[in-house]
Image (cartoon, rainbow, N blue to C red):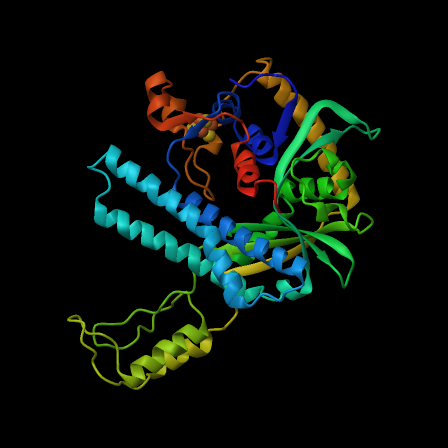
Length: 405
Ligand code: SF4
């Protein structure tokens, strides 16, 4: 059970506290975490790790004054994602061993290949879209864990309230002369539609507030020395990189070996390439043999003409600016909410359920439903482990980082 000494909060904890007090109680007070990582979480974590590996490599090259090639950057991304993919495979294997009636070996192999393809495709699309980052910006910090004291209205540190988190990436723009916070978000839907939600995400406001006060970073664990440079540079700009986990789809072949002219979630280039295959050798029949060349039909030309090569659906960088006023509003809210969290840890606030949060359309159903409905020690032990720190994700990032950038 978490003790009520100095309270350290993260954005995730505050968000959980706001959305369901019972969920917060399980997660941050009793420190229970699901034993098995769900696939969407594994994909998101491996994508993050791949991008971190890539930007760490770019950071090292920039320090030495070397221009990294795209191939080298892609290799670094692979090295970054491989550990997380291996962890996911290990988790699947343990799941299969624990319950042989659930997953069989073929399904395990399929699942692991699908995860790898999803992660690899997403990271490669990112490299393709933002290769210019290597030349245009200087990397200051990658996956940088931080802990900063919250400040009261008079500018003094509030007693016993710390704010903790991890900057995905911090860049310096030599052309404009400002420091940019970059956050990577993976999504299952259209990357363009996330724009409307960015203003509602307090995380980037909080991170900008913290980054803007980096003269306090002397106390941060393992802060990259480059964060102390450019202290006078303005801070407020955010690159919100949204990565869709699945890429443009391959159009389907019909039974007669021609390309389907039904609507397909893909780009004009992908559809055009498939049409060329149809014209050169035709698609596969049911027995796998090619049917031979077939000209493109009028309907297919119509479908092709209606398509575009806008890849924003799959990869989009949204740029936002957080004003000083927004940052101060965020700070005041966290000081108040941090006080509520402290009272709840001490058992002075009732732990209430919010059934409206159990099944939200944009996220997985709550993974604590079983013990929420019927809480037993056996139920807890079957599906959950007790972690050593309420903010394990930050601790893991510090460990991955090993004190380096
Ligand atoms: S199942 Fe619903 S009420 Fe229970 S902890 Fe989860 S979100 Fe809260």
